[in-house]
Length: 260
Image (cartoon, rainbow, N blue to C red):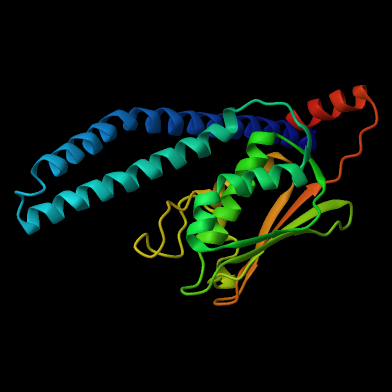
């Protein structure tokens, strides 16, 4: 009887927790969305003032206007990233077989400007298929590759390698770079929302990208972890379940199971 009561309490607590998480996600989405309009006005009017009076403003005022524009830009980035993070719960797409051999080159093409600017070299080995939501898997790789380019050493061209190592019934994909690296003690903290190891003066960003990656990989019943040493680059290791489906009915059953 005690076990039955404990199980009922556990089930009730899980339901309440799920409800609270969903409410928090909805709140984050609504709050972020409502902040967009006033922030957009700040950006527009500060830009108008800078454009119209740039030649007449004294140095201190011009510098203050520039700081307003930059701070507003950072705020807009934070809001957009928060919107992306909250939307991961609400996007409802079907799981399908995704060829990473086809998806990753598309992601690399999207990063063309960053790659050319940094003179990055991206080496892609043969990659497997994974079972997932295409838009989210695309965002996962875009965030990780963008980070690998961003956190590069000064005067050293980024070299990034993407390869796979099937192991223990899992598809393991590794993204390895020669960047600045980080202290291994922060290997778990970097996946927390808004967690930054560097100030925005050193590297742009809001600290949301890796938390989105973690949320995506969790939704796909996989895992993500990082290995690194300061000054010696980083390795991000993704693991997805290997899914072998033979019939249409198995596809439907698997989709329902994963979505639940």
